[in-house]
Length: 362
Ligand code: SF4
Ligand code: SF4
Ligand code: SF4
View 1 (cartoon, rainbow, N blue to C red):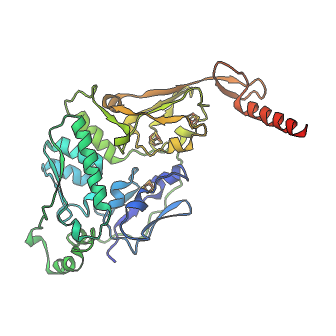
View 2 (cartoon, rainbow, N blue to C red):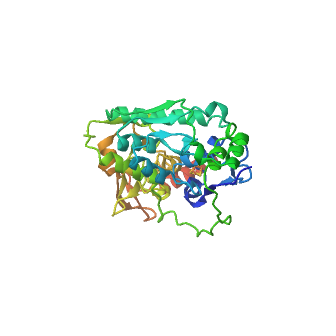
View 3 (cartoon, protein in one colour):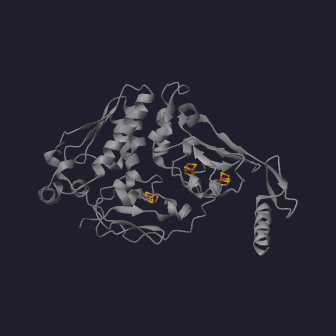
C-alpha cells in the first residue's frame, strides 16, 4: 500500500515481560484487518497492509511502537517552543491518535492554552474506531486537567485545516487526491520529504527483563510538565478507574507470600523490592497501569486502589507490604511469617493433600 514507517521493538512489548499479558491495545486499535496481530504469544506487524497512521504508537503503554522519521516527543517539544496548539492530520501528525492522553495533558499545561484537535477529516477517512479513541483521550485529558483546576482544555473541532499550497508538489497533490480522503497516515506521509531508510531490522539482544526496565517518554514529559507548574497537588485526587495511564494499589499483607513475581515482571520498576527484600515498594509516577502485576499474582492479593492522590503520584514511594521471613519448621525454607503458624504454605498444602489421600483410602 504505502511506504511503511512503522517499527516495533518487540522487546519493549508487555508480552515479553509476561507472556499472557491481557494487553492487545495495538491489535484492537489498528484500523486495517490483519495488520497488527497476536500470534504464538507475540505481537506481529504485517508491513504490507500498514498505512502508518501511528494509532498503535499512541496506544502502546510501553512505546514499543514508533514511526520512522516522526517522533511524537520531538513534535511535542516543537509545539511547546512555538506555542502551537493545533493537532491536525493535514498539518503535523499522521493521525491525532499518536498523541496519547499524557501528551495532551502536558501540552495544555506547557502551552497554557486550549489544545485543539482537528477532527474535520475523520468522517472521510477509513480510521474506523480510532476517532472514538481520540475522543476518549480528549475526555480523559480534560478530566485530569479539571482535577488540577487548570483553566485550559483539549477541544475537538472540525477545522479541516488546509496545508499551505506552496508546500505541495503536483505529485503530492495527486497522491492526496488518491489517498487523502480515504486513509489516515498516507495523506500525512505524502506531505513529508521522502527519506531512504534501511528495511532490515537491527538484531536485538535478548532482554533481561528483571534488570532492564522501561520508562516511556510520554511519562517523562508529563512529570516534567506537572512539576514545573506551581500547583498544590496535595488536595487533588483522581479516580483510578477514570485514568488509563497510572494507578494506585494496595496489597493484602496477610495473603502476600513475598514470592517476588509481581515486581519481577513490572516493566518499569514501579513495583519493586526494598533493599532488604522484606518490603514491596510502589512508585505511582512510573506505573503505566499495564496490570500485569495483578495478572501474575498467585495469591490474588494485589488490588487497584479507588483513588490516586496527585502529590503521591508525583513524589511518593509507598510501602505496600512488609514481611518477616522465618525458616519453616518442616522444610527449613524461609517463608513470610504472619504471626501464627511456623510451617510454610507449601508444607501445609502438602500435609492437607496427604490427609485427603489417607481419608480417601479409609
Ligand atoms: S500495545 Fe504495546 S505492550 Fe500492548 S500488546 Fe501491543 S506492543 Fe505489546
Ligand atoms: S506496578 Fe504498574 S507498571 Fe508495574 S506491573 Fe503493575 S501496573 Fe504495570
Ligand atoms: S503481591 Fe502477589 S505476586 Fe506480589 S509478592 Fe505478594 S503474593 Fe507474590
